[in-house]
Length: 162
Image 1: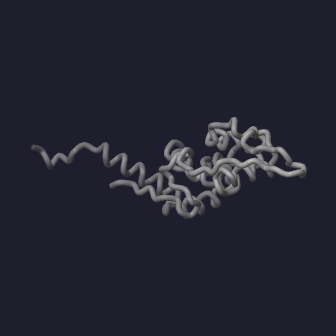
Image 2: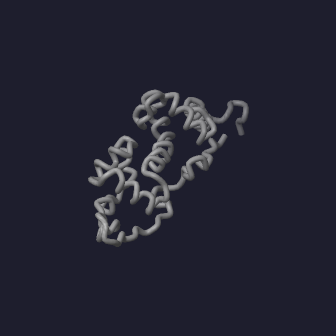
């Protein structure tokens, strides 16, 4: 039995897609005479960060922490994410944590610690989001994954000797 891994159309993320698979738009320079005159988004601190996923995990999937780790303001982070990913930082982080959830579940096998590790305030929030994306509750997902693994590891039945 092959465990289905549906695409995450609710959040616009294909779970088999890596971060490099996102279509990005080039950053554009802001011109004018206001407070942001001469600011070029392509030279911001975030362009030095090449491992977005690692930074998302370090910030515990929180946009305020992501801004702090990136050494930019929350508003600047919003602008950059809008330019690069076409969504807000928190939307992107929510996609990433649901993208990481199956791996955490298969390694941990318990829903509650995984939900807290992924930055959810309550396990029920994690369960609801996970089910919306994958079609199964986290516990059923783990059970199906381990049942598939156990079935593949079973020796042939004794009634089928050659």
